[in-house]
Image 1: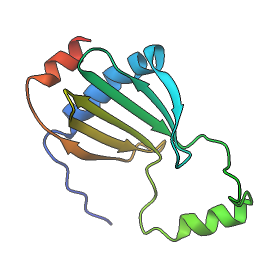
Image 2: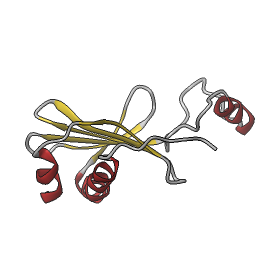
Image 3: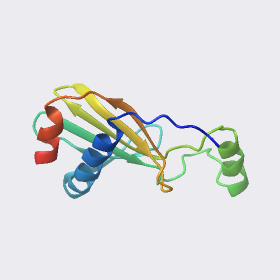
Image 4: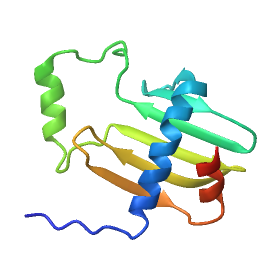
Amino acid sequence: MTLRLVASGDGDALAIRDHLMPLIRAHGTIEVQRDAVRVVSWRPGEWRFEHWTPFNDLQPGEASSPGYRQALKRQHREPDLPYGLDVWLSGTRVLSVLWADDGSFQVAAFSRGPWEEAALAL
């Protein structure tokens, strides 16, 4: 059994993510970064929201065989968390959350403050 430490703010971070995701999907625009991760961005006022997904086209020279992808996956001790959300306010990242379809997640950055209520009010 693996012990996982949970920060007291994890629930709040996930609540903010769950509130923002429908807004980002409704108002954001799709961008493709150089590393081939599909990113949906939304920039209302001083906010910047970036949500990325693993659903993307193969890049030239990238192997497409399932066996190759499985071999890459086995190189990691913990499963990759393919989805992510970064929240920026006035150029400062205040939240970064990663997650997977199986419900696993990681709050990579979470700066507590009045921005939380403002984000939930959007």
